[in-house]
Length: 281
Image (cartoon, rainbow, N blue to C red; front, side, top):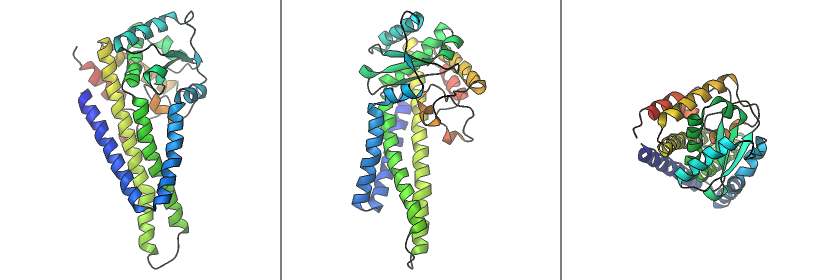
């Protein structure tokens, strides 16, 4: 299943890149390069400093080993099983149950857990969650999401310019045709780019689920953890941060779900749990 999802990610990135290049061919070279540099700078700046930005946003503090000895024990065990360096461990001061990983590489990785998830899960379930986060680190998902975000960001930026052109463009004889073209470029293509970006995010979650479960040789523990976390979020959503960072967490930390699967940052908990419980070791 991992190979299938890796292939899906590659295809989606290729489609997103093709859409990006096609849009680029419609614009003058200078404007397109400006959009690429501007959005690329913003996204890769975020990638380079992602750990500091996200940890600050969620008021996370580095966990003291003396206070969180069991969490450190689990992290070290999973690090050894994953053949990765032991990352920094942070605690998010929230009663909502969740966890995330960030950092630009395995050597600069951070694993963060909320206070709520530490209270909610038993040791095996927490180990499954930590293994899922290590899978994101191992699979370089921060880099992949940054690449997808950069391409989708440029397309969205160009879409904004196209919408402004449609509103304030010239009034020549071809204005009707130009208006339709600009509206398509300004509305439909950014939507398609966003849908592809979200599909990549969901695909990476499936991969992290499977990789994490195989690391600890236990799919049921992670499945149990996901069900508990999902139920907890429905009654106790995160009250800090914002939706733009939802893809980083093991489960969307905010109240409510998108009305269609296409607009979700994560696969449904039901589908994830079914896949995990069907795994053989």
